[in-house]
Length: 227
Image 1 (tube, rainbow, N blue to C red):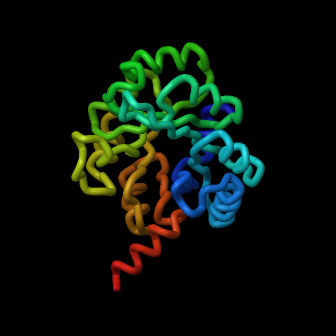
Image 2 (image 1 turned 90 degrees about the vertical axis):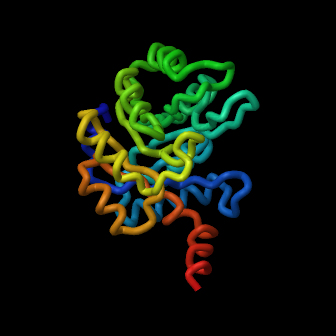
Image 3 (image 1 turned 180 degrees about the vertical axis):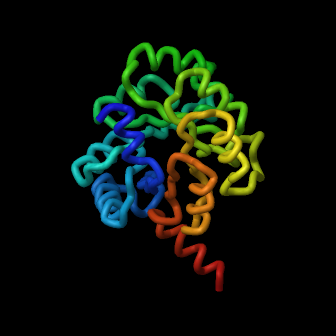
């Protein structure tokens, strides 16, 4: 699929994030593949997934576009979503339709700026689609200027300067939609179908839901707190 076909396929739909870290009970590429298949059966239009091994397994299980990322922590940076070229290279080997990366204004490993990093990435992989995981409006504007294909609200509330932000961040979604004139993906804090519809009604291209669907320990905790 070319970029326009990928965007058409995900428009107005639900993307399900199928991720489990090594500290979580569902940590397994096989399990993430089955989780993705369950999401596909439920009507998901795409899958967001972490690590090349999970993406490889998911692509065996479903014929859906994949937003791939690779979470790796480095000692000299707070950026952990696809932070360096090493992660980009490894993701490219398994062929996700879209690669997501942290697009906040924080420095990456080796004190590299997003602008410096993304220039190298685009030069090496000019035909790949990229999603910018942002936390505030200024980062979205920068991401558009740098040439990202999609802007996401993924990091809202997860940077030092956006802590305490109420999620879902409808204000940021609407501001992006009204001013950036490019595909916006709503992501972060969507727990209910009503919140999902509210985000889509703002005019976002599509939306991602993760924890509310694919993290049973968090879902259980939410119910337990309710009683």
